[in-house]
Length: 489
Image (cartoon, rainbow, N blue to C red; front, side, top):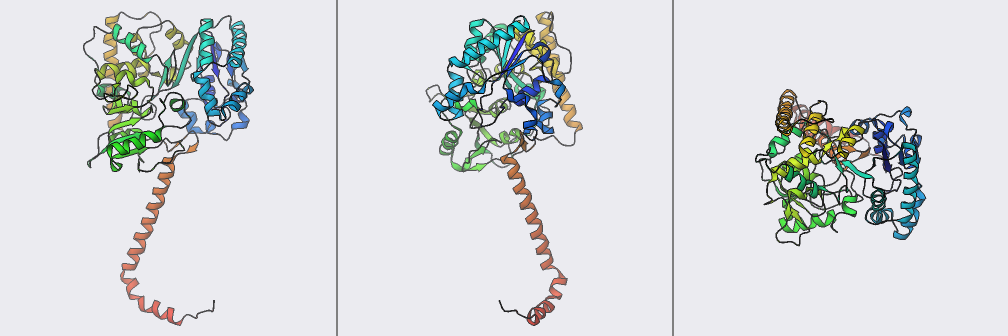
């Protein structure tokens, strides 16, 4: 395989080296042996970022990499960050400039990419595909003109420790402008003969890695839960259909009533909203407190869909293959309520469209996907990976054998989870910090700890005041107070 990963230096979220974590993850795989990197130069300036979240142990575990200078790739060149300065000056902020880059071509960037890909092709003796982690119109145009496959990756909506860690793999886009609808049409055509689909619970049992705690509480649940998002994410700035998280919160509070809406803030978000704020340890628990979930296009919607909850999405999202336009709208807002064949759509989304995160930078997997395997082959390879079995990258078995293996692997994963949960004393919970930054939920947790400490001290005080010894010694304290000299102020 001859692969060119491209990681842009544009400071889209107000930080240098925005894709340093992705770079670190990639060089911990077999990718560098097949790759020519075109990246942000800051990705190699590790000493500059030793105190950042990418170097913290938890993030190294979550993103599956280790810090090792010997892993730095030899075939690498750098994109000039000054390319983007005219755009920032024109559009005032990096976020607005980033939105332009996502949706529109930019000739200076295209010229730079053309020259870099020429050098990559000479070094690798050709290029099989380019890897990117965001939509960039200029990159899409350059790859299309040169006839090079462009693979868009991103963290999937199901993530450890609650779920099996997933990722996106799409030749058209990520977050928005994806090929999910076209891919789903192919899925339906290839499996048109199938009349039985795994239930949502069966898929959920195969992909959950902890005990399911999504049932509604004994008290009446909230009628609506709103999952807000990172304000600077492309999900919102380019693919939100003009909606903001705050707008959705206010809309739901007006529609369902203030006390019937529970809001889950993004751990790294900066928005402050009024209303009932969720403090659950993970999204699974939050979803369990709500009848339905509303969001622009948060990944929480995918978890809610898999849990059988009604989901309403206001922005562009691959989940639309499992939804339908809201009846009283203009086709902008989509809902799972009344959507046809949810099990079929969920099978496609979670077992074929999403891939195991471990395989994101695996050249063998990437090469296999470039050959266009069937959806049944894709699902079996993904399930085999989750089971710890070797993949079928060479000649695949006949379709009837693949179908039987698909069922067997799905059952094996579901049974493995039930056995593991039964043996564990308590499920894992997501940490209350993400990417090295104390989240809203960490602050809430710390506040609750202080309140518990205050309550304990108050109970201790009340117990002391109610004790017999305190009452017996009351006259002595009165006398001491009367006889104590009073100093002038």
